[in-house]
Image (cartoon, rainbow over all chains, first blue to last red; front, side, top):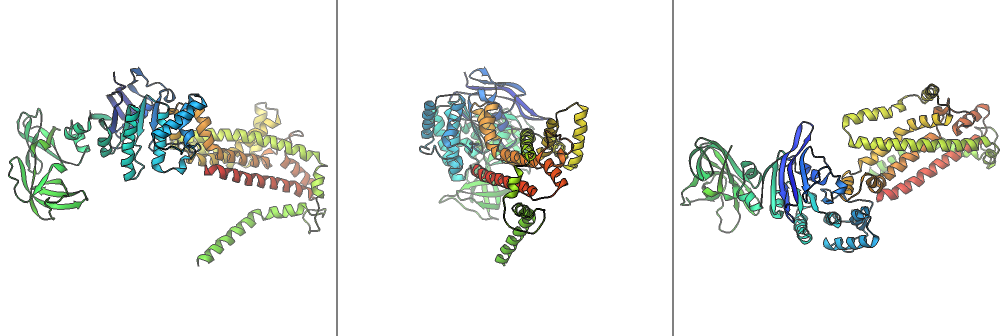
Length: 356
Length: 261
């Protein structure tokens, strides 16, 4: 039995639908990321699970029990907030012990749990500090310790890393995952940052406009997106509209707008069908000489170049079509200047064709 | 140039203070002046006028009445202001505008008119206890001041803290008790004190509503001045001024400590 099930959960704000018939199941101990652009309904979903927003239709089941009408304070769900939401008038220890105090545990039991939680997040000895005396990363750890101290049945994290600077963010990301594994708790992590989701999640649920687009493990989400929406949101992709001019089984030939004819993977395509073709930028190879392979090889002209340190992003024109190519910077890799002629090529398997 | 600016700023502030507080200095000085008429030249130092207050028991009982009235009015006003401010922070902008206007409108009506209106209203509903009418009108009048202060305090309040408390198992009451109220305490205390002082010193609101037993201190002072002017009234005023100043300073100290939290 899954730990948490959302069954056609719907939330409306006035006339607009924030979450539309969302159905998903999360297994025990799993780390799931809700990923999507802002306004996609991911935070609303999290707040419904936490009990801060009412559910307009559908059910939320935790351990098989319907909880969507249970008040937040009775759900036993721990939450880490975007701005940490630490109580500023309480010490770190009082913050962490707050949930147990509300549960009327004994002084000794609370002290013990607080010490254990502080050790878990590696903040031993900081219990008497006030939140304002801590760094952002330390506050984040306190927030995590506070949520876990009540031994919740589920841990929710609402963009917890967005207020940290880049270096600290990576460190805290790994730390959150370590702690989640150590405690063995089921966790849902809301983020709009795909790198974060790919690095953290056992499974990613990609949302857009209140709908679940796909739920799968990070590799499948990146390599085998279920639709153009997921494919275009994750990674940097070239998106070309076109129509199918030839197809055989899993392969299709697409004539894209601008006149480019390319081969890609498609299942169940039919002749003449309008499609969206998706090609991740780092899958495009740029070479001075013809790579020799057949398939998708096109002469192109470099029209733009942005140096990004680990890679260089090229803008190329193949006849009337613009293609972006992300080329890793390493010794021996060919470099191009604006105005250079080159060949752009990619494996047919890297070009994904979705019905429009 | 920079120094000249700093001096100018300092001078400006000094003049502003002198303008605002200067008259109080004269009152305090006059209360120690043995001259028997009230304004007159300075003739020496005496505590005679402070002793004289003790011979006027009506001042003592009026002070007690005013204190009781101010306490009740401030409690009611602060409670209403807190609830209204809280609702406004969680509500929608257009509702808030209407509510804010409605709650602040008493400030735009001449206080003496409000006093008269309360007298009529009390007669209409058959309210015959003078104190109830006084408390009601004072509470209505001072409430907007508490509302302003508490709204300012709430502007800094993060409602995610209430969600956090709920997720940790605190019900509505426990959340208010352990999180919301402690964090709003500075603005609540400030609002309450402000209401208390405003009510304590207010004359026109009480004009038509007092009787022999509910004469407030400003009413008794007003009646006293009408019959004669001697420095005893300055002594009474000086005590009120010093008490108000002391309260304010104390509050700032206390609030300062709390605000650092």
